[in-house]
Amino acid sequence: MTYKIVNLVASSSLGTTLDLYNLAAAVPEIEYEPEQFPGAILKIKEPKVSLLLFKNGKTIISGAASEADIQAGIKKATKIISEIQKDVKPKQKATYEIVNLVATSTLNKQIDLFNAAMTLDDIEYEPEQFPGAIVRLYKPKLTMLLFKNGKLICAGAKSEDDIAKGIGKVKKLLADLK
Image (cartoon, rainbow, N blue to C red; front, side):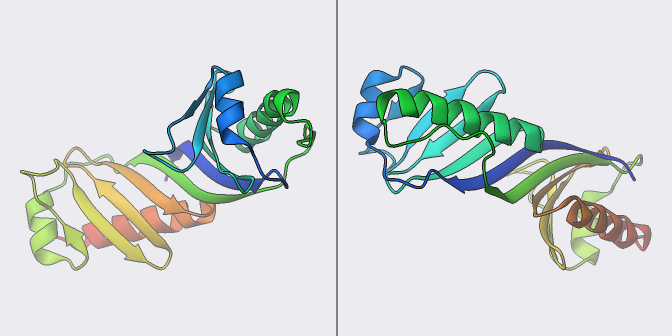
């Protein structure tokens, strides 16, 4: 069973409060609209990641293809921020926690989504709303988007082991269908 991780989301802390207004005024890559969202968005081109920056120093890094991208993204972000806000120190080795892995895979067969939704529990399928079925798993806690061409997207994983277990469970569920 092969899969490809397409997005890692991690949380981290810069260990100090951030002056989002001044950062946004000084750094063109930072968007800050406090009436829309309480955090600022820093988009980095290489590696291609986005960071949500909050006043309390917490950050959410998304769009990373690997843990190396997370490290590089935090390193670049702290370097950019430290040039404006001197109490933020550039990080050589960032500490972070992965909070979500998103992966894609294929089951290599066509799937009757209507039959799956009618037969199995925890599957939602409303083709007028969305072309795929939503499969909710509880151990591990994952959401799988399943499409009739056999492709699937796994979201909510905390580890690659969760992804493998989730895909295995979906394969087993679908194997039991007539």
